[in-house]
Image 1: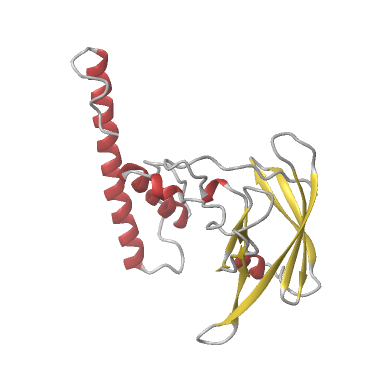
Image 2 (image 1 turned 135 degrees about the vertical axis):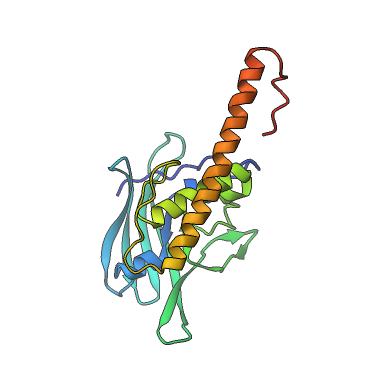
Length: 219
């Protein structure tokens, strides 16, 4: 199986971010029936509709075994085999929820965290704590957070995640008050973003005509 796992882009703190790394989600695998003992298959990542990486998987009773190839900065490909333990915690109303047990080691001490996702910016799939990954939201300003919130809501409603695109009608099965609350949030954030863009445009015009210091705009 082919698949290179390079570092994701950096956050403002200089740390790689979770959202830019390939990851495996135990809940998604569970929903797709990939954790049943004896299951074999693969997992792929795509970009623009084309496969960019893949791994092989084999499920056992309390373990998921991964097989893939990895290399550093154009070096030789290496075959990697990784075994990830799975535990199941009982749910309040019956059934059990699966978790990965992070196989990472830090200073000779096993991580052992129970997590829903493992990430692959390096040789192995480990939890975000072992890789010291930051969330994109940790380096966002107010405008970034508002834009991300708007895009998330638009996608949730079945629309396009772009500013100023029309909101779709209330999805079937969604409470009216929930839909109205989401619409109100989008309207508020869209207004704030438009105001910020207008302020930025006016500042740029002022810089061009020499009446404003280029370093004065708050970022």
